[in-house]
Image (cartoon, rainbow, N blue to C red; front, side, top):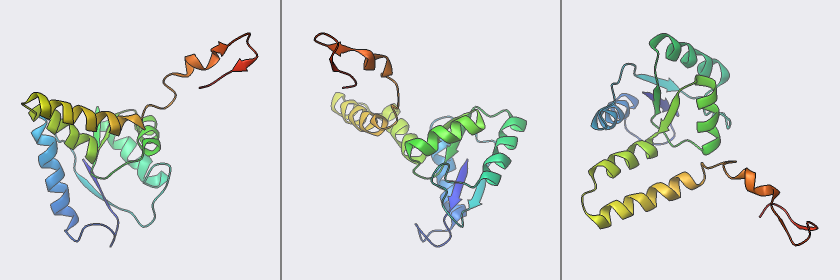
Length: 149
């Protein structure tokens, strides 16, 4: 469990309190929380949120502890999530994904399940990068027109 502390930006609550709240969310999904850390961010890195040194430090920790899932208590962009998964070799879940999973497990009515599914699909829509590229070779007509569509 990683809580990025944006030093003055974001919530007025203490980083440790936010981290404990995130641990509670992970425990609600029956995840075993083995490591907890607050990571100070002086500057946001667009590709990974964290700097190169911190990404490497966390990668070593993930290898030592043999972790399968890393929860980042912040909203990650699809690019950041993908880059962190590549760098760490583990599944990365951000706060929004964690909350959506809790709602999905606890939805009881048909309407509630549909609402959660709609929210999850709109969340995952931007994360489906390069999944249907095999269709880009389709051509219309005599092969003169068409292409990615």
